[in-house]
Length: 245
Image (cartoon, rainbow, N blue to C red; front, side, top):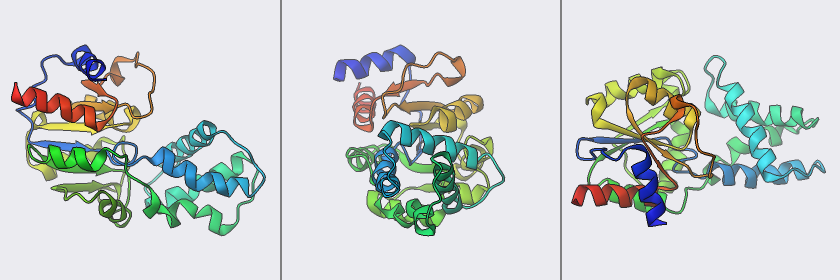
């Protein structure tokens, strides 16, 4: 695994200077929190109650499509986005969902669980950098996740504060203003190419793609990250190796 991680590192940015960064900013859901596993565990029992059998991958694909569609409209709170997502999934499956099923993702948001390596990796990284969050969520909902992760972040930038959702550049521009550092002093770390890697590429931020779900290699230059790692544990190894070297 270590050789594979180093190979990915050399493939993209053999000369990334980790000493220049002051802030590591993170996407949360998909990067720190395993939203795929959490969503499947919450939604599968709901649709099974309607006698629908759907592969996990197909269910998550429906979620992603509905989520992306919902945040492309005018800003609404993320709890409303999640309700709309469930309604959309119901419509795609020709289901007339009960009201409580439409809000299942909101009602159980506190059950969305972090990846096993998230807390330990963040604790290690905060020895060297300030940590921040840039997330497509409401402040109140992120507070539930923050308690699960158990980490104190220097800055938390939410879609609610900005009034827009990533991949809008507004979210990153507000973050830059709040961070009060230079662009080249930020390293953004995220799982989503669409929501995070593409916009930070546009803005000239250094970035890391945490390929949590083993997605295929990117072919569009707009989607190339500066660094690809399979998890945060691997990123910690690379950073510590470089800082000690």
